[in-house]
Amino acid sequence: MEKPLNAITAVKERKAYLFTKRLLDIVLSLMGLIIISPLILIVAVLIKVEDRNGPIFFSQTRVGKNGNKFKIYKFRSMVSNAEELLIDLLDQNETTGAMFKIKKDPRITKIGKFIRKTSIDELPQLINVIKGEMSLVGPRPPLPREVEEYTEFHKQRLLVKPGCTGLWQISGRSNIGFEKMVELDLEYISKENIFFDIYIILITIKIMIWSKDAF
Image 1 (spheres, rainbow, N blue to C red):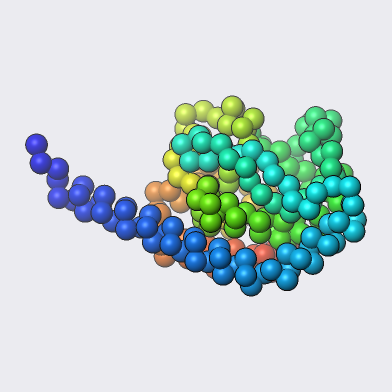
Image 2: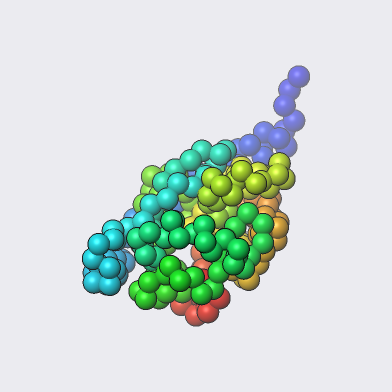
């Protein structure tokens, strides 16, 4: 039985989109790393000045497309033993579902507060994008312990590569609960196209400069 013409067209359009998206990821990530290299050096020095014993970068296992795990990279914004202190803070969680966030997290360093507010802490994720583990735009990459709590509905957000930014991030980020985040992720997946990606990237840049919502 022959495949319907509209289905063939959809497959071709999907392949074209994924190719263009990957090309955009690589080009913009490389350009970004070159342009922000002085900023990366300054942030690295400030992190070391405040806490000489801890590393400059922080890596953590996250879950990507189709449930594949990878190491995500960020500038370290917390004290060195942040993961050990987490268990005593879980009852203070200020968001819903399989996520953890509190506005006045005592584990965050002074420089950490600044780079988190401006999302500078996430710039090293451009390395993950170049490696193909992430995309510039996509759902937030969850922790393995978060995915363990997912229902089959929630797992749909793992059908695409996670992103450095996404529809959730530009729609309120920390002010939005887990279920709404999933809805926004699935909305993005259903609308995926290169112009939507570019729109989200531009709005993200605006938010990084002017937003006060991130924590």
